[in-house]
Amino acid sequence: MRIKSIFYTLLCFILFIGCKKAEDPIKEHYLDFSKRDDQLTGGIKMIPITTPIGKFKVWTKTVGNNPKIKVLLLHGGPGLTHELYESFDGYFPNESIEYIYYDQLGSYYSDQPNDNRLWTNERFVEEVEQVRIALGLNKDNFYLMGQSWGGILAMEYAFKYQKNLKGLIISNMMASASDYNKYAEEKLGPQLPPAVFNQIKKFEKNKDYSNPKYTELLFKYYYTEHILRKPLEEWPESINRCFKHINSNVYVFMQGPSEFGITGDASLKNWDVKSKLKTLTVPTLTIGAKYDTMDPKHMEWISKEVQNGRFLFCSNGSHLSQYDDPKTYFNGVINFLHDVDSGNFK
Image 1 (cartoon, rainbow, N blue to C red):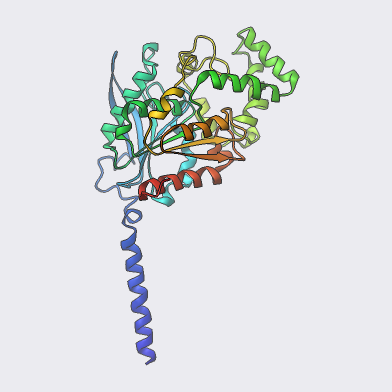
Image 2: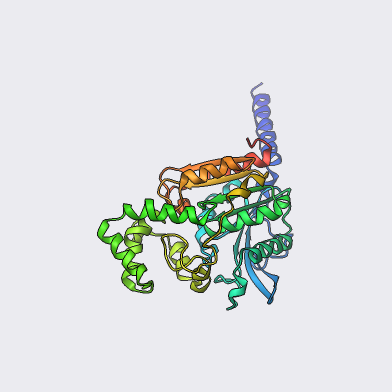
């Protein structure tokens, strides 16, 4: 009897292990590159794109295999890099989520043509569409996630091409430049020590943006409160590298030289899409944070304005909540992806 019992227990264990594997074929093949054309490059592809002034290439890197969840990451700036998303390596693979790093045209790992005619929302939208096609993303698997400027680009893409999307994530970006400016000027600026804020405003009034003291004040008093809430010496290497690789020409042309809103002759100065949000039907997650440069109440409003939205609030986070409130940030993003994929999104 004892032998039979041991045999039965062993058989049950083998069947259990077999069932576990059968239940999760995606996890089993998540890191299998053997049938992909980018195996030798570790997932990196230089994708050719066509623009009004010629052809260029943009850098992408795919991590993992998941036929149902593929997340294309749109970085901020404009003119920053995919490097601000590198913390995703510590969270997405364990959930078998496929994700694609991507440097937009003009950014460090992609071609960097020196022509300001390229830096328009409309052209960037068409660039994203060409990347989507090249990577084989479609409405059955394509999630678009944009943070900060990437959130602007994600919204603009969705307005034109939401039929291609399975889900949309707008992280730390409002739907109006003027509302953002007002929040920065009236809410965030006065929270700084008065002497510091007055100094910063004096530099900006004199358009002395390249002054090292101006940069020092921003990093010491503003960035560590509202961009990434850690002492500068504790900032992740990936973020320092991202700032080091910024294309300042693209950034200033579209965003402007000031960190208190979109100012000057910046091309995004009058950007406002609040009235168009109600046209979005795709499942949408908006992310706001208590200490963000963007108003979290505005982000919550966006989630209610779109037809199928959800809001994620990072109570300990700032503009880069994936680094200073990662538990809240990643739990919320991962739950959204799985809920949409399983049909349980509400």
